[in-house]
View 1: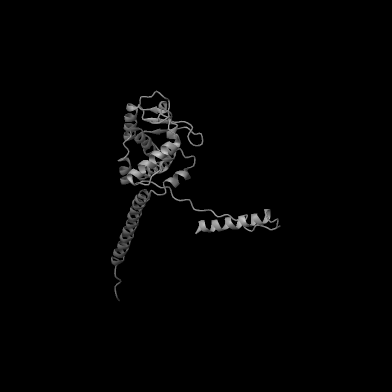
View 2: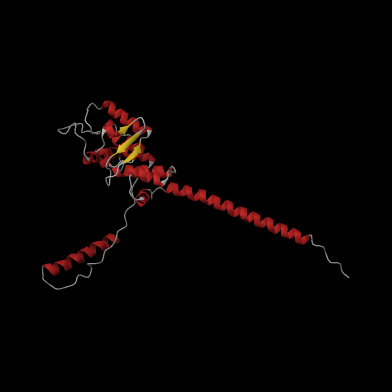
Length: 253
């Protein structure tokens, strides 16, 4: 296994470093320039029934709104933590994400259920603080919730629902759902704020429904064209056959 090989290489590397620096031996480390790239695991995402089961236990209005913005708008947990009230444009159903990853600004859009979750939370929220999502209890009450605070909340609901979930998985779930709904890859890239489309492709690698539909749709066209060509060939052969049959027979004599 690659991980085992990498572990053995590191052990050998450290052993030769010890011989060189601690024992004072003049010896060449044979594995200094050897590196092994491990395959990156595919991004995880939730199935539709898992999404329903997870949100079925999220009763807190603030938490529901936070997670909806990850699932429906593709926001990163850091972006949710730093979101401000003035970044919301309800009339146009837009959210302005300032200084996202890579210091990039972008606009994302609110689905109906995400907008409803925000409305419900804001109707309950009495603070005039600029930060959108605030700590609700303890000495930090009224302060913007931290990234770790959001992560703890999703871990809590994960245990309550029995669903293995993370903030990042909600983003990948959005990407997968959009791709399976035939959204363009470049559109998903803009919504997620990816600098490289290869990153978006990686997020969508698990969207096999889209691949399956594209395959059968394209294959149907291929088969139709193949059958049409066979029909044309059969028709041509038939014409040639009848043409030969109608040639005059030479008289004997």
